[in-house]
Length: 267
Image (cartoon, rainbow, N blue to C red; front, side, top):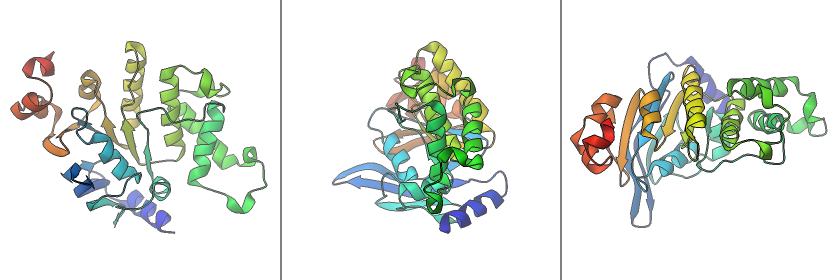
């Protein structure tokens, strides 16, 4: 299968290089250029934050990388191939997981059941459809490992609907981890959180950086500067600045176009 071939190529890639790159990625909606000629690199062990005002094209970019949208032009290079235009289920099985702005979990199911379903999506057993799901030791182990990595081991049997907002966001990330991704696309994981939950999510993202390439979409600037090794700023679908966080923080173009001046960046 192409998914297995690409996954093997990714696993064999030398360290330090980009695991995923976009080249001239573009998405048009009629006359609107939602993403215009965007080129970025994601590396394992690095959080690459993408920031910008509402309507800048950040979520559209995430949707392109995850396969929820097909690009109008450009390439998404991963595992020695071009993923542009592949459906989301194939991209997920190749090792790219994502979270959404609005929490996307199965509320009536337990934490473990949510994670087990996610693990099954990466390694389906269609030929054993009449076996009990709980009998698959490898799937169950993936679910248990994902819960532990996301800090939810103690919530295993809790119904998802009874979790706090912050725990539900953790569960969504745990479901991503259950698919064993190399790339995590996190779309506003701190949205709607209070200070304590935000701090916990920041620590979780820091922990996940080892072994993953993370693209983070986030409006909380304190969180962005706490976790990001690289920062890209988008305005009106285009990249206006990309580089180390301090370089971007001090960019006059960024201060003018997005963050409202130097006081917003340094305050």
